[in-house]
Amino acid sequence: MTPPLPKVLLKPQRAQPFFGRHPWVFAGAIDAVSGDPADGAEVELRTTAGTFVARGLYNSQSKIRVRLYSWEPEVPLDRAFWKARLERAISLRHNVLNLNQPNAAYRVVFSEADFLSGLVVDRYGDWLSVQFTAFATAQRKEMFAELLTELLLPKGIYLRTEKGIGKLEGAEIHDGPLRGEPPSAEIAVEENGLKFVVNLSEGQKTGYYLDQRNNRAAAARYAHGRRVLDAFCYSGGFGLYAAKAGAAEVECVDASDAALALAKKNAEANGLDRVTFVAADVFDHLSTRAKEGKTYDMIVLDPPKFARDRRAVPDAIRGYRRLHSLAMKLLDKDGILVSCCCSGLILPEEHEDVIVQTAIDAKRDLQILERRGAAPDHPVAATCRETAYLKCWIGRVN
Ligand code: SAH
Figure 1: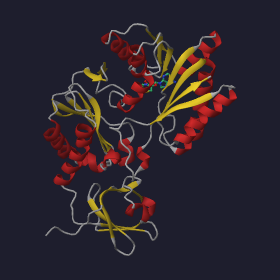
Figure 2: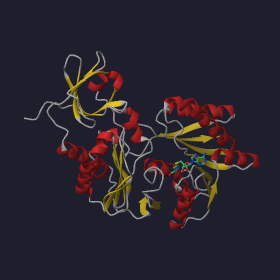
Figure 3: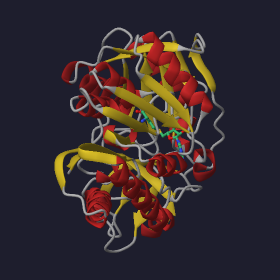
Figure 4: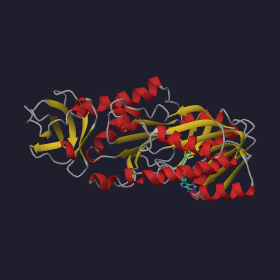
Protein backbone atom coordinates (compact mmCIF):
# COMPACT_ATOMS: atom_id res chain seq x y z
CA MET A 1 0.00 0.00 0.00
CA THR A 2 1.36 3.40 -0.92
CA PRO A 3 0.67 6.08 1.69
CA PRO A 4 -2.07 8.58 0.80
CA LEU A 5 -0.90 11.63 -1.12
CA PRO A 6 -0.71 15.05 0.51
CA LYS A 7 -3.81 17.06 -0.27
CA VAL A 8 -4.28 20.59 -1.50
CA LEU A 9 -7.76 21.91 -0.71
CA LEU A 10 -9.27 24.64 -2.85
CA LYS A 11 -11.17 27.62 -1.51
CA PRO A 12 -14.97 27.49 -2.01
CA GLN A 13 -16.09 28.37 -5.56
CA ARG A 14 -12.58 28.03 -6.97
CA ALA A 15 -12.64 24.52 -8.43
CA GLN A 16 -14.32 25.18 -11.77
CA PRO A 17 -11.19 26.03 -13.86
CA PHE A 18 -9.52 22.86 -12.61
CA PHE A 19 -12.49 20.64 -13.44
CA GLY A 20 -12.04 22.43 -16.79
CA ARG A 21 -8.52 20.98 -16.78
CA HIS A 22 -6.55 24.19 -16.56
CA PRO A 23 -3.13 23.14 -15.26
CA TRP A 24 -2.09 26.08 -13.02
CA VAL A 25 -3.30 26.31 -9.42
CA PHE A 26 -2.20 29.70 -8.08
CA ALA A 27 -1.62 30.25 -4.38
CA GLY A 28 -4.72 32.49 -4.15
CA ALA A 29 -7.10 29.62 -4.97
CA ILE A 30 -5.79 27.41 -2.18
CA ASP A 31 -7.43 27.12 1.23
CA ALA A 32 -5.23 24.55 2.95
CA VAL A 33 -2.47 22.04 2.36
CA SER A 34 -2.32 18.85 4.38
CA GLY A 35 0.28 16.11 4.56
CA ASP A 36 3.23 18.54 4.36
CA PRO A 37 4.30 17.97 0.75
CA ALA A 38 7.92 18.69 -0.15
CA ASP A 39 8.54 20.94 -3.14
CA GLY A 40 8.22 18.84 -6.28
CA ALA A 41 6.09 16.19 -4.55
CA GLU A 42 2.94 14.66 -5.99
CA VAL A 43 -0.30 15.95 -4.45
CA GLU A 44 -4.03 15.55 -4.89
CA LEU A 45 -6.13 18.60 -5.57
CA ARG A 46 -9.52 18.50 -3.86
CA THR A 47 -12.53 20.79 -3.53
CA THR A 48 -13.58 22.32 -0.22
CA ALA A 49 -15.99 19.42 0.14
CA GLY A 50 -13.13 16.95 -0.38
CA THR A 51 -14.01 15.79 -3.91
CA PHE A 52 -11.03 14.68 -5.99
CA VAL A 53 -10.18 17.09 -8.83
CA ALA A 54 -6.73 16.23 -10.17
CA ARG A 55 -3.20 15.08 -9.47
CA GLY A 56 -0.32 17.49 -9.67
CA LEU A 57 3.13 18.50 -8.45
CA TYR A 58 3.56 20.94 -5.60
CA ASN A 59 5.92 23.89 -5.22
CA SER A 60 5.67 26.19 -2.18
CA GLN A 61 8.15 28.60 -3.82
CA SER A 62 6.24 29.31 -7.01
CA LYS A 63 3.18 31.46 -7.61
CA ILE A 64 1.93 28.38 -9.44
CA ARG A 65 1.58 26.33 -6.28
CA VAL A 66 0.42 23.16 -8.05
CA ARG A 67 0.87 22.15 -11.68
CA LEU A 68 -1.80 19.66 -12.69
CA TYR A 69 -1.11 16.70 -14.97
CA SER A 70 -3.82 14.08 -14.50
CA TRP A 71 -7.53 14.00 -13.81
CA GLU A 72 -7.54 10.25 -13.13
CA PRO A 73 -7.69 9.57 -9.37
CA GLU A 74 -6.04 6.16 -9.62
CA VAL A 75 -3.13 6.86 -11.97
CA PRO A 76 0.11 7.88 -10.20
CA LEU A 77 2.48 10.39 -11.78
CA ASP A 78 5.24 7.81 -12.10
CA ARG A 79 7.81 6.95 -14.76
CA ALA A 80 5.22 5.09 -16.88
CA PHE A 81 2.92 8.12 -16.75
CA TRP A 82 5.63 10.55 -17.94
CA LYS A 83 6.74 8.10 -20.60
CA ALA A 84 3.21 7.92 -22.01
CA ARG A 85 2.99 11.73 -22.02
CA LEU A 86 6.30 12.01 -23.89
CA GLU A 87 5.20 9.36 -26.38
CA ARG A 88 2.00 11.29 -27.08
CA ALA A 89 4.00 14.48 -27.71
CA ILE A 90 6.51 12.69 -29.93
CA SER A 91 3.74 10.98 -31.87
CA LEU A 92 2.25 14.35 -32.88
CA ARG A 93 5.56 15.46 -34.37
CA HIS A 94 6.48 12.13 -35.96
CA ASN A 95 3.21 10.52 -37.00
CA VAL A 96 0.95 13.50 -37.57
CA LEU A 97 3.26 16.32 -38.63
CA ASN A 98 5.95 14.18 -40.25
CA LEU A 99 8.75 16.31 -38.87
CA ASN A 100 11.06 13.40 -38.06
CA GLN A 101 13.49 13.89 -40.95
CA PRO A 102 17.30 13.81 -41.05
CA ASN A 103 18.78 17.11 -39.73
CA ALA A 104 15.33 18.32 -38.79
CA ALA A 105 14.68 20.94 -36.14
CA TYR A 106 11.39 20.97 -34.28
CA ARG A 107 9.86 21.28 -30.84
CA VAL A 108 9.28 17.81 -29.42
CA VAL A 109 7.55 18.84 -26.20
CA PHE A 110 5.93 22.20 -25.50
CA SER A 111 5.06 22.29 -21.82
CA GLU A 112 1.33 22.90 -21.14
CA ALA A 113 0.56 22.59 -24.86
CA ASP A 114 1.58 18.91 -24.51
CA PHE A 115 0.09 18.44 -21.03
CA LEU A 116 3.63 18.49 -19.62
CA SER A 117 3.76 21.78 -17.74
CA GLY A 118 7.36 22.78 -17.07
CA LEU A 119 9.11 20.76 -19.77
CA VAL A 120 10.25 22.00 -23.18
CA VAL A 121 12.26 19.81 -25.54
CA ASP A 122 13.61 20.85 -28.93
CA ARG A 123 15.31 18.61 -31.44
CA TYR A 124 18.17 19.93 -33.54
CA GLY A 125 19.45 17.14 -35.77
CA ASP A 126 20.98 14.51 -33.50
CA TRP A 127 20.77 16.65 -30.37
CA LEU A 128 18.06 17.58 -27.95
CA SER A 129 17.84 20.82 -26.05
CA VAL A 130 15.82 20.58 -22.85
CA GLN A 131 14.39 23.36 -20.70
CA PHE A 132 12.96 22.77 -17.27
CA THR A 133 10.63 25.61 -16.44
CA ALA A 134 9.30 24.17 -13.17
CA PHE A 135 10.96 23.02 -9.98
CA ALA A 136 9.28 19.61 -10.20
CA THR A 137 10.44 18.86 -13.75
CA ALA A 138 13.97 20.08 -12.93
CA GLN A 139 13.96 17.74 -9.94
CA ARG A 140 13.09 14.86 -12.30
CA LYS A 141 15.74 15.81 -14.84
CA GLU A 142 17.55 12.47 -14.75
CA MET A 143 14.33 10.56 -15.36
CA PHE A 144 13.33 12.82 -18.26
CA ALA A 145 16.83 12.59 -19.77
CA GLU A 146 16.65 8.80 -19.53
CA LEU A 147 13.19 8.62 -21.10
CA LEU A 148 14.11 11.02 -23.91
CA THR A 149 17.26 9.02 -24.62
CA GLU A 150 15.22 5.82 -24.77
CA LEU A 151 12.50 7.30 -27.00
CA LEU A 152 14.54 9.50 -29.36
CA LEU A 153 18.09 8.08 -29.31
CA PRO A 154 19.84 11.47 -29.46
CA LYS A 155 23.64 11.79 -29.56
CA GLY A 156 23.32 14.10 -26.61
CA ILE A 157 20.97 16.19 -24.51
CA TYR A 158 21.84 19.75 -23.62
CA LEU A 159 20.17 21.62 -20.76
CA ARG A 160 19.31 25.18 -21.64
CA THR A 161 16.94 27.18 -19.50
CA GLU A 162 15.40 30.60 -20.03
CA LYS A 163 16.66 33.33 -17.75
CA GLY A 164 14.65 33.98 -14.60
CA ILE A 165 13.05 30.54 -14.30
CA GLY A 166 15.26 29.50 -11.38
CA LYS A 167 14.10 32.52 -9.41
CA LEU A 168 10.41 32.08 -10.26
CA GLU A 169 10.48 28.43 -9.26
CA GLY A 170 13.10 28.43 -6.51
CA ALA A 171 15.12 25.91 -8.50
CA GLU A 172 18.85 25.85 -9.14
CA ILE A 173 19.26 25.07 -12.81
CA HIS A 174 22.71 24.95 -14.41
CA ASP A 175 22.91 24.90 -18.16
CA GLY A 176 25.22 22.37 -19.78
CA PRO A 177 25.37 18.86 -21.23
CA LEU A 178 22.91 16.53 -19.49
CA ARG A 179 23.50 13.26 -21.35
CA GLY A 180 25.68 11.86 -24.10
CA GLU A 181 28.08 13.85 -26.26
CA PRO A 182 28.18 17.62 -25.78
CA PRO A 183 26.83 19.26 -28.95
CA SER A 184 29.29 20.74 -31.42
CA ALA A 185 29.25 24.55 -31.43
CA GLU A 186 27.44 24.53 -34.74
CA ILE A 187 24.69 22.09 -35.55
CA ALA A 188 23.51 22.21 -39.15
CA VAL A 189 19.77 21.75 -39.52
CA GLU A 190 17.46 21.92 -42.48
CA GLU A 191 14.12 23.67 -42.69
CA ASN A 192 12.00 23.62 -45.83
CA GLY A 193 15.12 23.01 -47.93
CA LEU A 194 17.17 25.80 -46.32
CA LYS A 195 20.21 25.16 -44.16
CA PHE A 196 20.57 26.88 -40.81
CA VAL A 197 23.38 26.76 -38.29
CA VAL A 198 22.27 26.48 -34.68
CA ASN A 199 24.38 27.01 -31.57
CA LEU A 200 22.70 25.17 -28.71
CA SER A 201 24.71 26.65 -25.89
CA GLU A 202 24.98 30.26 -27.00
CA GLY A 203 22.25 30.98 -29.53
CA GLN A 204 19.13 32.90 -28.56
CA LYS A 205 16.19 30.98 -27.13
CA THR A 206 17.30 27.34 -27.49
CA GLY A 207 19.31 28.28 -30.58
CA TYR A 208 16.68 29.01 -33.20
CA TYR A 209 13.09 30.24 -33.48
CA LEU A 210 11.35 27.03 -34.44
CA ASP A 211 7.86 28.46 -34.00
CA GLN A 212 8.19 30.63 -37.13
CA ARG A 213 8.90 27.75 -39.54
CA ASN A 214 5.58 27.86 -41.40
CA ASN A 215 5.31 31.64 -41.18
CA ARG A 216 8.65 32.02 -42.95
CA ALA A 217 7.35 29.80 -45.73
CA ALA A 218 4.05 31.73 -45.85
CA ALA A 219 5.82 35.09 -46.03
CA ALA A 220 8.17 33.79 -48.73
CA ARG A 221 5.18 33.20 -51.02
CA TYR A 222 4.88 37.00 -51.38
CA ALA A 223 8.58 37.72 -51.78
CA HIS A 224 9.25 37.09 -55.46
CA GLY A 225 10.61 40.22 -57.18
CA ARG A 226 10.12 42.36 -54.09
CA ARG A 227 12.58 44.55 -52.20
CA VAL A 228 12.40 43.00 -48.75
CA LEU A 229 13.35 44.32 -45.31
CA ASP A 230 13.73 41.65 -42.61
CA ALA A 231 13.68 43.58 -39.35
CA PHE A 232 14.84 41.65 -36.24
CA CYS A 233 16.33 38.98 -38.49
CA TYR A 234 18.29 36.92 -35.88
CA SER A 235 19.92 34.11 -37.92
CA GLY A 236 18.20 35.25 -41.10
CA GLY A 237 15.00 33.18 -41.04
CA PHE A 238 12.51 35.32 -42.95
CA GLY A 239 15.13 37.09 -45.07
CA LEU A 240 16.77 33.94 -46.38
CA TYR A 241 13.45 32.34 -47.24
CA ALA A 242 12.56 35.52 -49.15
CA ALA A 243 15.90 35.50 -50.99
CA LYS A 244 15.41 31.87 -51.96
CA ALA A 245 11.91 32.69 -53.20
CA GLY A 246 13.38 35.23 -55.63
CA ALA A 247 13.23 38.56 -53.81
CA ALA A 248 14.88 41.38 -55.79
CA GLU A 249 16.88 42.37 -52.71
CA VAL A 250 16.84 41.54 -49.01
CA GLU A 251 18.07 43.73 -46.20
CA CYS A 252 18.44 41.94 -42.84
CA VAL A 253 18.64 44.06 -39.69
CA ASP A 254 19.46 43.05 -36.13
CA ALA A 255 21.12 44.73 -33.17
CA SER A 256 23.15 41.64 -32.27
CA ASP A 257 26.49 41.09 -34.01
CA ALA A 258 26.43 37.42 -33.02
CA ALA A 259 23.02 37.03 -34.68
CA LEU A 260 24.22 38.74 -37.87
CA ALA A 261 27.32 36.55 -38.00
CA LEU A 262 25.02 33.51 -37.96
CA ALA A 263 22.74 35.07 -40.57
CA LYS A 264 25.71 35.72 -42.92
CA LYS A 265 26.96 32.20 -42.46
CA ASN A 266 23.49 30.87 -43.26
CA ALA A 267 23.18 33.02 -46.38
CA GLU A 268 26.50 31.67 -47.64
CA ALA A 269 25.64 28.07 -46.80
CA ASN A 270 22.55 28.41 -48.98
CA GLY A 271 24.35 30.23 -51.80
CA LEU A 272 22.12 33.28 -51.42
CA ASP A 273 23.55 36.59 -52.53
CA ARG A 274 21.41 39.71 -52.92
CA VAL A 275 21.18 39.78 -49.13
CA THR A 276 22.73 42.63 -47.13
CA PHE A 277 23.16 42.76 -43.37
CA VAL A 278 22.88 45.79 -41.15
CA ALA A 279 23.86 45.90 -37.49
CA ALA A 280 21.54 48.49 -36.00
CA ASP A 281 18.69 49.18 -33.67
CA VAL A 282 15.60 48.57 -35.83
CA PHE A 283 13.81 51.72 -34.62
CA ASP A 284 16.82 53.89 -35.50
CA HIS A 285 17.41 52.13 -38.78
CA LEU A 286 13.81 52.46 -39.96
CA SER A 287 13.81 56.18 -39.06
CA THR A 288 17.05 56.71 -40.97
CA ARG A 289 15.74 54.85 -43.99
CA ALA A 290 12.50 56.86 -43.90
CA LYS A 291 14.49 60.12 -43.82
CA GLU A 292 16.54 58.90 -46.78
CA GLY A 293 13.30 58.32 -48.67
CA LYS A 294 14.03 54.61 -49.13
CA THR A 295 11.08 52.30 -49.76
CA TYR A 296 10.49 48.54 -49.70
CA ASP A 297 7.89 46.23 -51.24
CA MET A 298 7.79 43.92 -48.25
CA ILE A 299 8.65 44.43 -44.59
CA VAL A 300 8.88 41.71 -41.97
CA LEU A 301 8.69 42.81 -38.34
CA ASP A 302 9.57 40.05 -35.88
CA PRO A 303 10.55 41.85 -32.69
CA PRO A 304 11.45 40.12 -29.42
CA LYS A 305 8.86 39.81 -26.68
CA PHE A 306 8.12 43.41 -25.66
CA ALA A 307 5.79 42.50 -22.75
CA ARG A 308 7.11 40.05 -20.15
CA ASP A 309 4.41 40.86 -17.60
CA ARG A 310 1.06 42.63 -17.53
CA ARG A 311 2.48 45.93 -16.32
CA ALA A 312 4.69 46.09 -19.40
CA VAL A 313 1.78 45.82 -21.86
CA PRO A 314 1.01 49.56 -22.37
CA ASP A 315 4.68 50.31 -23.12
CA ALA A 316 4.87 47.30 -25.39
CA ILE A 317 1.82 48.50 -27.35
CA ARG A 318 3.47 51.93 -27.74
CA GLY A 319 6.61 50.18 -29.06
CA TYR A 320 4.60 48.16 -31.59
CA ARG A 321 2.82 51.37 -32.68
CA ARG A 322 6.08 53.18 -33.33
CA LEU A 323 7.42 50.23 -35.25
CA HIS A 324 4.35 49.95 -37.44
CA SER A 325 4.09 53.65 -38.18
CA LEU A 326 7.68 53.54 -39.42
CA ALA A 327 6.83 50.51 -41.55
CA MET A 328 3.83 52.37 -43.04
CA LYS A 329 6.21 55.15 -44.14
CA LEU A 330 8.63 52.72 -45.74
CA LEU A 331 6.23 50.42 -47.57
CA ASP A 332 5.70 51.24 -51.22
CA LYS A 333 2.28 51.00 -52.88
CA ASP A 334 0.98 47.41 -52.81
CA GLY A 335 3.54 46.59 -50.16
CA ILE A 336 3.33 43.44 -48.06
CA LEU A 337 3.55 43.75 -44.31
CA VAL A 338 4.40 40.70 -42.21
CA SER A 339 3.96 41.56 -38.56
CA CYS A 340 4.78 39.11 -35.79
CA CYS A 341 4.15 39.41 -32.09
CA CYS A 342 5.34 36.77 -29.64
CA SER A 343 4.04 38.40 -26.45
CA GLY A 344 1.30 36.09 -25.21
CA LEU A 345 -0.07 38.93 -23.05
CA ILE A 346 -0.94 40.88 -26.20
CA LEU A 347 -4.00 39.29 -27.74
CA PRO A 348 -4.42 38.78 -31.51
CA GLU A 349 -7.09 41.53 -31.65
CA GLU A 350 -4.81 43.96 -29.84
CA HIS A 351 -1.93 43.22 -32.17
CA GLU A 352 -4.19 43.64 -35.19
CA ASP A 353 -5.62 46.88 -33.76
CA VAL A 354 -2.13 48.37 -33.63
CA ILE A 355 -1.57 47.55 -37.31
CA VAL A 356 -5.00 48.79 -38.39
CA GLN A 357 -4.72 52.03 -36.40
CA THR A 358 -1.26 52.89 -37.71
CA ALA A 359 -2.47 52.27 -41.27
CA ILE A 360 -5.42 54.62 -40.73
CA ASP A 361 -3.14 57.25 -39.20
CA ALA A 362 -0.84 56.93 -42.21
CA LYS A 363 -3.86 57.19 -44.56
CA ARG A 364 -3.01 53.83 -46.13
CA ASP A 365 -5.59 51.25 -47.19
CA LEU A 366 -4.93 47.93 -45.60
CA GLN A 367 -6.13 44.44 -46.45
CA ILE A 368 -5.71 41.46 -44.16
CA LEU A 369 -4.36 38.48 -46.07
CA GLU A 370 -3.42 35.97 -43.39
CA ARG A 371 -3.78 35.63 -39.63
CA ARG A 372 -1.41 32.96 -38.50
CA GLY A 373 -0.03 31.43 -35.31
CA ALA A 374 2.92 29.25 -34.41
CA ALA A 375 3.80 26.10 -36.37
CA PRO A 376 1.85 23.04 -35.15
CA ASP A 377 4.79 21.55 -33.28
CA HIS A 378 3.84 24.43 -30.94
CA PRO A 379 0.20 23.40 -30.54
CA VAL A 380 -2.38 25.14 -28.38
CA ALA A 381 -3.92 23.07 -25.58
CA ALA A 382 -7.64 23.78 -25.62
CA THR A 383 -7.68 23.70 -21.83
CA CYS A 384 -4.79 26.18 -21.56
CA ARG A 385 -5.20 28.74 -24.28
CA GLU A 386 -2.37 30.77 -22.80
CA THR A 387 -0.26 28.38 -24.89
CA ALA A 388 -1.28 30.43 -27.97
CA TYR A 389 1.25 33.26 -27.94
CA LEU A 390 2.60 33.86 -31.43
CA LYS A 391 0.80 36.01 -33.96
CA CYS A 392 1.98 36.34 -37.54
CA TRP A 393 -0.16 38.70 -39.50
CA ILE A 394 0.21 39.32 -43.24
CA GLY A 395 -1.43 42.23 -45.00
CA ARG A 396 -1.29 44.37 -48.14
CA VAL A 397 -0.79 48.10 -47.81
CA ASN A 398 -2.00 50.32 -50.65
N1 SAH B 1 13.02 36.71 -37.20
C1 SAH B 1 13.92 35.85 -36.48
C2 SAH B 1 13.71 35.86 -34.99
C3 SAH B 1 13.77 37.22 -34.34
S1 SAH B 1 14.10 37.21 -32.65
C4 SAH B 1 13.84 34.45 -37.05
O1 SAH B 1 13.01 34.18 -37.96
O2 SAH B 1 14.56 33.58 -36.58
C5 SAH B 1 14.30 38.87 -32.29
C6 SAH B 1 15.64 39.49 -32.70
O3 SAH B 1 15.54 40.89 -32.45
C7 SAH B 1 16.86 39.02 -31.95
O4 SAH B 1 17.79 38.52 -32.87
C8 SAH B 1 17.43 40.28 -31.26
O5 SAH B 1 18.85 40.35 -31.32
C9 SAH B 1 16.83 41.36 -32.09
N2 SAH B 1 16.59 42.66 -31.45
C10 SAH B 1 15.99 42.91 -30.27
N3 SAH B 1 15.80 44.23 -30.10
C11 SAH B 1 16.28 44.83 -31.20
C12 SAH B 1 16.35 46.18 -31.65
N4 SAH B 1 15.86 47.17 -30.90
N5 SAH B 1 16.89 46.43 -32.85
C13 SAH B 1 17.38 45.42 -33.61
N6 SAH B 1 17.32 44.13 -33.26
C14 SAH B 1 16.79 43.84 -32.06
